Image 1 (cartoon, rainbow, N blue to C red):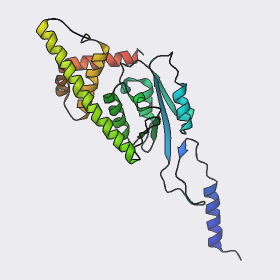
Image 2: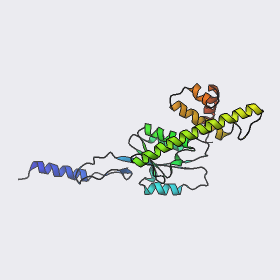
Image 3: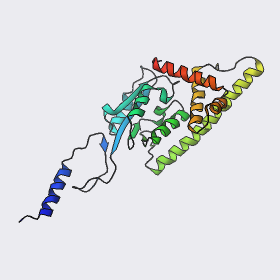
Length: 238
């Protein structure tokens, strides 16, 4: 006579062992016949190169070696003057990523054009419950070392932010005092992008649009005008 409880247990174990896990899903090891106690993690990749002449294959190969499927890699070929959220590939990634996913990059600088931009991107992903792992830099928020490196990144980004504000304000003061502009023109796309990044960070911290604009020496109307111009260029694929 067959023990019905034993038969049920064997059937359940067989069904569990036959479950198929997609190749881009990673889970911790568990005893045979038992469901994993770890949360399944979907790996998404992101690559960025500045020009079409640069080869992103090195990044793709590194992501593939880390377990990311090619179909799950989001890519951008764009100039360094665009912030992360202005890039089409990053926009698609932010729309696609879900709570519990992990975004894998070759190097953390692929996430942004500056430390501020990188940190803003990391924060945007983490607000959605998405973790970030950088292969070359060893940044993995699930480890104590990775968390330490993220904290260091935040500190450096804050330092960079202050330097940019000081540089911009010093340039404005010098131009006003001498009646001429020194260094890069204030309308230079890189300078504008720096200011927009600072303003976006201030807004993310709860500052009003007027406060964010004043922080970079603009009026609120000027801030809106530059934001609209950037959005228009992005829509046109510039």
